[in-house]
Image (cartoon, rainbow, N blue to C red; front, side, top):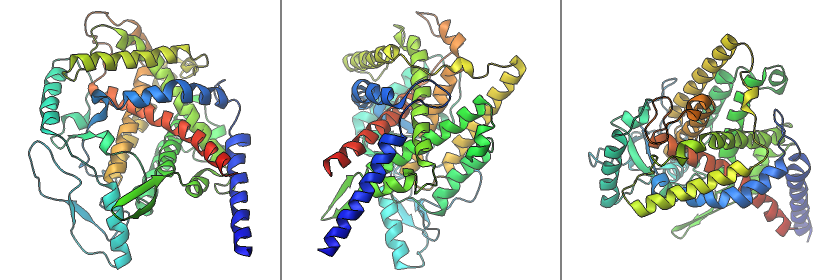
Length: 436
């Protein structure tokens, strides 16, 4: 009876802590803009999330071309596992068309059996499922011919690399993989300390100009979103040939509870909402690009392509109706030369963060990290190209502004991940209401 009472007490404390975090703390107007959390919740969960989820299941958006073999440019690669003595290497090439990064073997033994077991789990959970049908492979070749005929004016390493391959995002959902420890810590520490204008601490953040605060909050929001995905799709049980995935409230608390995070938890979640607004604004701005008849989301299936574009335009119409967009004109509003310098600083910092993603040791984590980083980069590209988008010709390609298939897929899937994160916060609330 005493044990039962203690368990009930712990559950009550946990519930009160989570309720305080999700209700009393995470509310009201966001910093650096006039939109509030509650309005975003209603808009996203009712209008955007159901549609963006359906959109990212369409063939055009479910396949992402990525190079997961580029070496880390900043420190020695420690393999695909969080245990430093558990180094893995890809198996020999199976086909010149499709390479299989999920097939791996040990190059050396781990020091202990527990390391082997933990590393094996991380390897299996973090491996990429590169299963593709012959029909899909033939379609990709057709897509490439179509894309090569388009008028592109930007270079993307992953698209031109011989190591790049298509990955089915639906077969490789973003969720817990066991990737943790020094390797994961070093990646995020490098991103914050070396790229966020030395504003990792709140006292420094408050003294920065708006542009630099925005950059930090974008990275913090991305970090929060990724953590929510891992908490919401956590490996709860494994056995008898099946895995059970679901929300892990304790893990969520460790990452976002005010008491567990030295008062940082709510700010992290608000930065997620801020990032959502930034990417929402980018979609609002880029809508005219997709509304032109010349833009076709090509997969070779005319009927499906038309339905996919209709769904995308429906999402744009919902976004246009949202009344509280972020005002990007407040950014870089100073002297012309100073604004140009800040934009270039943004670009260089962001490029550096993109390269750090090649240091992520888990293949699946690297996949989603690279995709969401490119999605955010594409959103910033859009916000910095307002004049070019306004001058787009209706019936011919534009040399002033162009998006590649890769950028489009990353943009919509990246925003879809943010939409899912906000929806999952609602799910955590509902979960605890049911347990009261």
